[in-house]
Image (cartoon, rainbow, N blue to C red; front, top):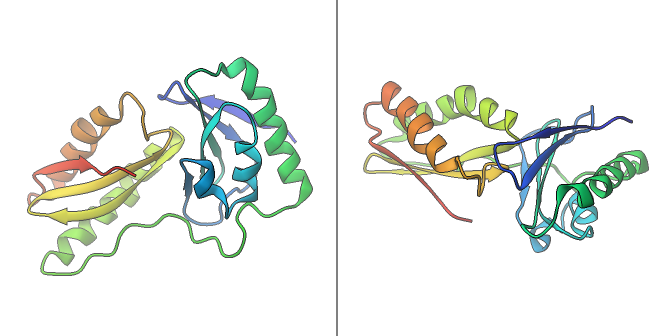
Length: 186
């Protein structure tokens, strides 16, 4: 098994591509060890000193390191842990793989929310996945779209610029009812 590694815009995060499917559908974000109990792979990665976050995409694993850790010290251990996990045949997620999905929304602006989700799924999420992350819809209220950045994109120095200059401009261009995009925390 050969695992490729790609840098991301977030210097604290690397993207690992094992050459096979990681998540059948959706994504899974584990910003800390307590959130990783449902994923044997994420739990294995959190046992490594210096790992502070794990994100699972369709064909990649994104790992975030602690600020005090150097990639040259933790990267070989991460590669080994991912390889060992895939070779063991253990599941990536225990039980059903549900993955991250957009929040449900009902009300008079349901049609607008549908358009927002469609643009996110067709235009934004594929680009964000290239950088080792994901973005999910959390709400729409009085012209403001609330989104959550995950994986490499959470905590990335350029995430605010991505939200404001990229995603906000795209949504405002196609959906005049959108006036602003704001991030939601974990």
